[in-house]
Structure formats: structure tokens, C-alpha cells
Image 1 (cartoon, rainbow, N blue to C red):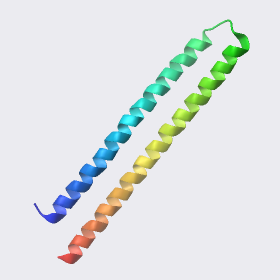
Image 2 (tube, rainbow, N blue to C red):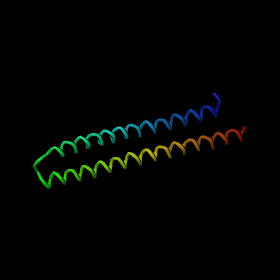
Image 3 (cartoon, helix red, strand yellow):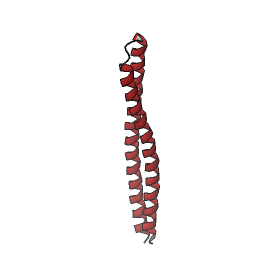
Image 4 (cartoon, rainbow, N blue to C red):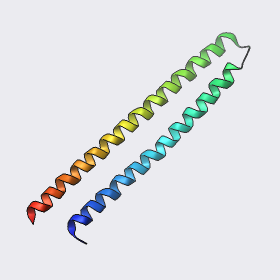
Length: 100
């Protein structure tokens, strides 16, 4: 296998490992988001507890917003990392072609 092909293969494997970890974390965040939305629904059904109910709903809404922001930022940073990895692979490919 040519050096260039080996290098590109190594970069692809390394990138996919990082992406796999990120996807695993994203799954946990999505699960947390789903559970918080369920909790919000359950607290909405409470007819007693007055201001405690309202405070709980506010805190759940804040948590939902934070998790959604985290999911959005992780998605953006994963895309940025992928683009950096591709740029690095292109640079290495150019360097290999120059040394031939």
C-alpha cells in the first residue's frame, strides 16, 4: 500500500474515532433532552404546589435550553474539526506529492 494511501487511511480512522465518541456524547444529551421534556409535561399536570410548580417549570425550561445549546455547539465544533482534519489531509497529500 502506498504511503499516501496509508496516511489518508490513518487520518480517516482517527477522524472516525473522534466522531464516534462525539456521537456517543450527543446521544446522552439527546436522551437528557427527551427526559427533561417528559418531566416538563409531568410537572405541567400538577394542579397543586403553586409557586413550587412554576419554579420547577422554569428550572426545567432553563435546563432544556442549556442542553439544546450544548448539542448545537457540539455539532458545530464537530463540523469544524472535520474540516480541519480534511484540510490537514490535503496539506499532507500536497507535501507527499512534492517529495516524489
